[in-house]
Amino acid sequence: MKKILIVNGPNLNLLGTRETAIYGELTLADIENNCQKLGQELKLEIEFLQSNYEGQLVDWIQQARNDADGIIINPAAYTHTSIAILDALKAYDGLVAEVHLSDIKQRESFRHHSYVSLRADKVICGLGAEGYEVAMRYMAEQLGSL
Image (cartoon, rainbow, N blue to C red; front, side, top):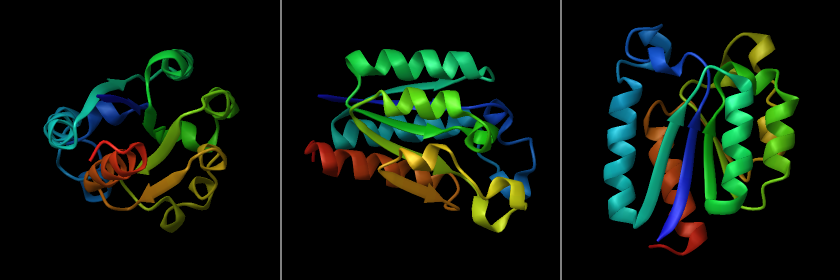
């Protein structure tokens, strides 16, 4: 079974209560439950993580070099600031899908640039929580687990 690491960045632990008009009403736990169910369907092992700390995200990405076939990452605010996350992803040889609940290109200008997109094999923006499912289906297709 192929393993997918789903990494979530800062403030995503507040989903469901924070700016619901932008991010929706689902909690991160709801999204994780949906991902775990879809993972079973797609024959993917899912490890779902969240941290508000950049270094923790970098550590998880580095660990994935040894045990994950793909990374789905919603770097949240680190999208626009973290060269460290970009560098960790560049050192990772597997598939990378970048997910954003909102369409970052339709938001404030400082959100338009994504360092992570420089490494991502696929970028999914503006689909809300469904973006995670689109990324998982992409991973399953690319990894031949379907």
